[in-house]
Amino acid sequence: MSTTTDKSSSPPCMEATDSDCTVPVIHIDPTLCTGCRRCAGVCPVGAIEGLPGEPQTVNADRCVFCGQCVQICSVYASDWADASPQEAAIRRQARMCERDMPADIGEPLFAAYYSYSLNKVTDMMKKPGQLRIVQCAPAIRVSLAEEFGMPFGTLTPGKMAAALRRLGFDRVYDTNFGADVTIMEEGTELIRRVTEGGPLPMFTSCCPAWVRFAEIEYPDLLDHLSSCKSPMQMVGALVKTYGAQLDEVEPANIYSVAIMPCTCKQFECDRPEMESDGYRDVDEVLTTRELAYWIKQHGIDFMNLPDEEFDSPLGKYSGAGTIFGVTGGVMEAAIRTGYELLTNEKLPKLQLDFVRGEEGIRVAEVQVGELQLKVAVVAGLQHAYQLLDRVQAGECDYHFIEVMGCPAGCISGGGQPKLMLEKQKIEAYRARKSSIYGHDAASQVRKSHENPFIIKLYDEFLGEPLGHVSHHLLHTTFHKRGPGRQSRSSDVSTNGNNDYSLH
Image: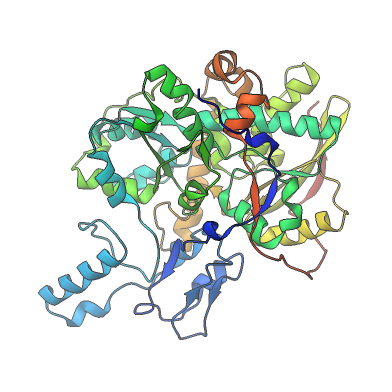
């Protein structure tokens, strides 16, 4: 591996530079928007602006790109009904070009939409002489099948891997592997902060919408965030270093794509600091819906594909990596490993129901050896404000807080299959969550630190968690992007405040 300046010496919080300008990800078509303001009702940060009955706009400086407005928008281009078929086709094609959408998508064009990357990816896939690598987030395997008429929550990791190979990828890796790496790094970071001193509570840094929210609304708390990159970015960094060595290929000849349920992941991918040794960690991001479009474009019979395995070593994961796709999953995975690293004892129970739940805030106290570990899980950014106000005021004594921008975690991301009815959302989120937990329960290895491929990664390449190599590749910095909110209520509401013991 070539050497460059070690990022570990960089401060955790930096001012955003002029070159780090916000590129809009979420858009509202003013020619379609009716001003119903349903999008404003689900926006956790008040970024949707406009009067009722008039076209709305997105304040890109406040938007965290979670895409919940895209999910709820029900206004589509029905105004073409009075046009001739030829004129309607021309209008539709023009609008699709404006959005950079693939030409043969047959679904309605809604007023709220996100930036598409599929055309860029398909063009790059034609470039000769490159190793084409893809990774898939845990939430994709429990939602992709819905785009092909299968029941909510159908688990299809094997069909997904098979489809991606037929789309032309040379290696099919898994973001779950990066989730296992995240637990090794983030768990070690938490232990050091608790035992040796450091900013507490420590917040997770897996969700890019949450990170952007903190940078805009609470920049004075950025040193409380874990310095870990997200699992997607960790896999990206390892693909072009560890993976490049194993494949005996130059990083410059690797094209790395990530399939994500999240509309904020392209923003994260494009952040200037998300590179290692001069190479972007991840080159491009596609959403679940974009992957479905692509599979359909190629005429792949997804439902009848044979199951295929992910490639080794960056495609082998534990059950703990799987549950990152639901709210509370990062916390549960971290406790599974942190408990055993701190106590040198086996965790009595792997299913930690007290961090599993719905939208809102859940808090608990967990006995870990002699430490009474105080934790909280926040699902949905609108619930984060009052808790963060308490941290700001020095009134919050939690050790570890997980924050997910979307209401049910990644399974409810803005890039997931679009669900028009509230009843459908409830059913889909419940089924996706059940499928993820079932996938974890059926896994032979359910703790990140027991994943043999993770052990091998540290033995052969990284050395140790928070070591020189891992800090250089897998950790990052955050930027102040706004003055922050100056006056808010300091009260906090929770979905329960209970003490739990693992014994």
